[in-house]
Amino acid sequence: MFGLLLLRGFFVFICTVVGFYVGGDNYVFGATVGFIIGLTVALFEAIARNVSLKGLSSAVFGVLLGLLLARIFNDALNFFLLPEDITNIIRLSITFIFVYLGLTLGIKGRSEFNVVIPYVKFKRQELKEEAVVVDTSSIIDGRVLDIVKAGFLEARFIVPRFILNELRTLADSTEHMKRQKGKKGIETLHSLKKEQHIEVIIHDEEVKGVTSVDEKIVRLAKNLDAKILTTDYNLNRIAQLQGVKVLNINDLGNALKPIFIAGERFALKLIKEGKEHNQGVGYLEDGTMVVVENSRWLIGKTVEVEVTSVLQSPSGRIIFTKLVS
Image 1 (cartoon, helix red, strand yellow):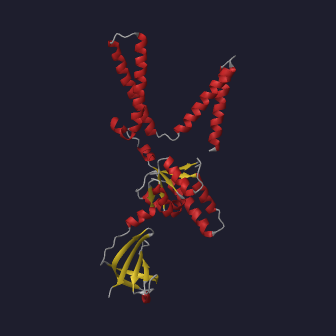
Image 2: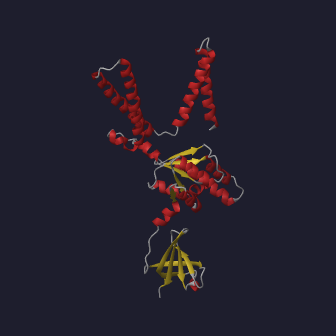
Image 3: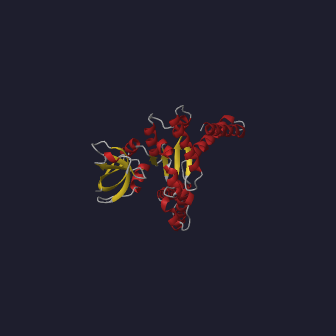
């Protein structure tokens, strides 16, 4: 980020120097014009970084269409015997009006751009239009890599710099568990960058006005008109309250778990005691908790159980069963 600012400043400086020499005797005026031109180009470049190729192409097409329509209307003025001054004013006004209408309609209708010009599609750019801000929990979780490899998610992944700093801090931690999580998250990012269906972008711009990491992620997603990828329940709730769409990996995992109905039977190994009296608890292969009534004395054994009910909680799905007699 600092290097880019330095490059822009150097460009403005060069433009100012060129203007100084081109200005000749009026070197102050020349340097001022050069500075303004350089600054304008640098600002345009900074703004254009967030403009997609698809949006720019549709805007250019809109401008060209506006100029074409303006030319048709201006040619029609030749049939009217109007004074030349009035004709020039009308032509200039018509040109500005149609260029403005073409530009705005082109930007608003960029999703239908390939309909206006058949067979013209920007596949890579359509991919970039789907922006997803990822948080630390989703990167450390690692399942996002499997989801991408399976082809269920194609998007432009935006990794904020402060999230990358969090991962680096975890990877440098003296605590073994934190260090392992940080290393796993960094490895996940490296693996994601190699996938063809997505693009991983490090977002360097700081989110001002908030200090909480969750609030920064929500604010950034709103600014970029992006979704949030997370496994954090609290971040999920905060984002939804502020109208930001969330892709929760845990919700996806729960949706893909097998559905059991009352009366269905299966074998289960009991692992530990339940919270209530005389309960046993086991787990399915996907991690779903299964509570078995009156089975505490069978802990450590594999038993056949029958489903009595299923409870969907914010933390996951819990299946309640009874022993098959």
